[in-house]
Image (tube, rainbow, N blue to C red; front, side, top):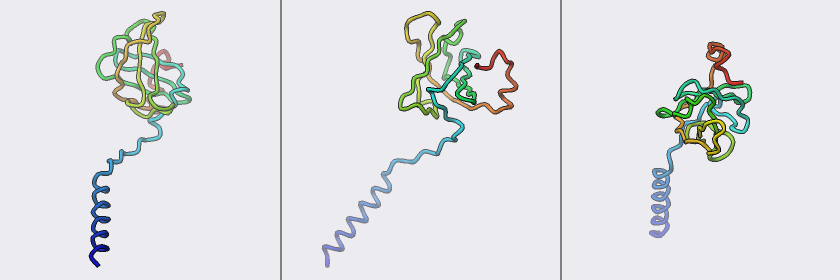
Length: 133
């Protein structure tokens, strides 16, 4: 009778251990925070920390951690590079490279801090010259 009891104790002990060492689940991201990086359209730099990006029918505000000097160029060349698939939902899903138009290098990396899908009201409050086309 002892071996089955010992096996049961081992089984439940391993089950309890695996339950406590399982990776923490992340909170689901709101669907409207994600966009398809392959479908992005126009990009407009508002200042050295903020840009607006159009993807499909939606517009997103992307902020960078710290200043990104390349965004101050008169005609910045902004490149988004996905890290793992075309759907990006947060700052760790893609890289933002900013270069100067006409310069052949890929641009300087700028670390994405936040991204936010603009509401219709937020978009309407922007002057037309500041909206990505």
